[in-house]
Image 1 (cartoon, rainbow, N blue to C red):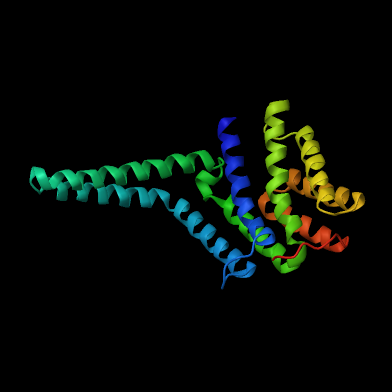
Image 2: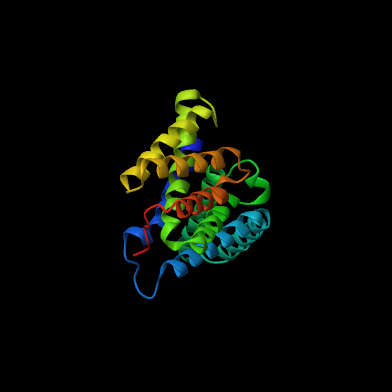
Length: 226
């Protein structure tokens, strides 16, 4: 359970970064298109590194072995600072391995960290659909999955449940009402976002697109990037 909670906290934090252009002015020359494009590039690079992790681990181990031999070739006084560097590299590698282990779902251990990549793809598609309604998709990405998962584990002791989806629906609908949507708009957008989260094979991809498109079609109040 703690591993899943940790994953959802990171998920919420990363989603919050996507909301930044709607509440903060990005520094020049960044705009939301460049900002999201850089995020997509970073996600793709991280995913490719995870996919190649076994090869990277071997390469790092070979590097550590060569570094160890290099350190041993020096005298005792010179060896000490180099040994500190070697130890720091080993600790950093161990830290990255632990974080990836906590963040990955089972199938991601075989296929890469696709949750982050698909989330960024969903965000970019939402931006292409309508920049002024992308806010709905990003908040759905941040709220629906996080609330559904944590409430399901905390109350129903399951990874996914209809009760958790109901809680996510209420929380997201309330957020939309507070942000200016009518009750009907909030209900429809929240309902479709929750259904997408529950049935989609990759909710990070579909939830933001569904929420953004639905909000646009319903004429929900626009929230344009600053």
